[in-house]
Structure formats: C-alpha cells, structure tokens
Length: 73
Image (cartoon, rainbow, N blue to C red; front, side, top):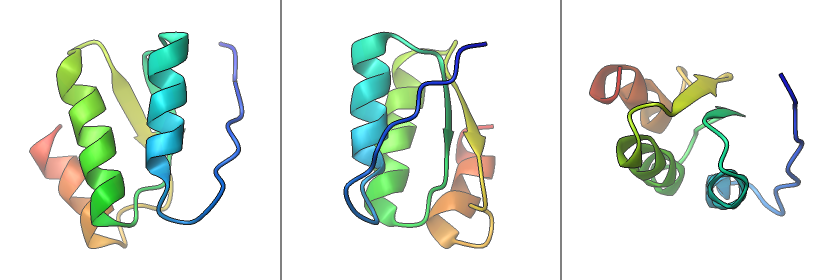
C-alpha cells in the first residue's frame, strides 16, 4: 500500500482530498468527515465507483461523518 499525504488548506475542505483521489485514480481514502459539505464530497466520490472505499478517522462523533456509516455501508 502506498500512502499519499494531501495537505488540506482549511477545516471543512475534504473536497481537496477527494479531488486528489480522483486525479490519482485511488480507490481508498483515509479521512475525517465533520461538515455537511465534506459528507457530500465523499459520498459523491464513493457512489461514482462501487470499488471505492473510505477509512473514516474520528468521524463518528460528528453527524456528517456518522451518517456515512449507514447511508453508504
């Protein structure tokens, strides 16, 4: 497994990670989801390809992250 760090310029910018994942063609993202816009960015990315996966870090305590566990199992 190759880990590629992505610098996120500000809180609530998971879209930066998702954009990098799309550009590189990766199928697994390790990320924390806290805000609704982050939820939407990640959910859209996951739904585009059934082979994609997300490892959620410290996300279950936030509603936007918690919802992903049930909406996209």
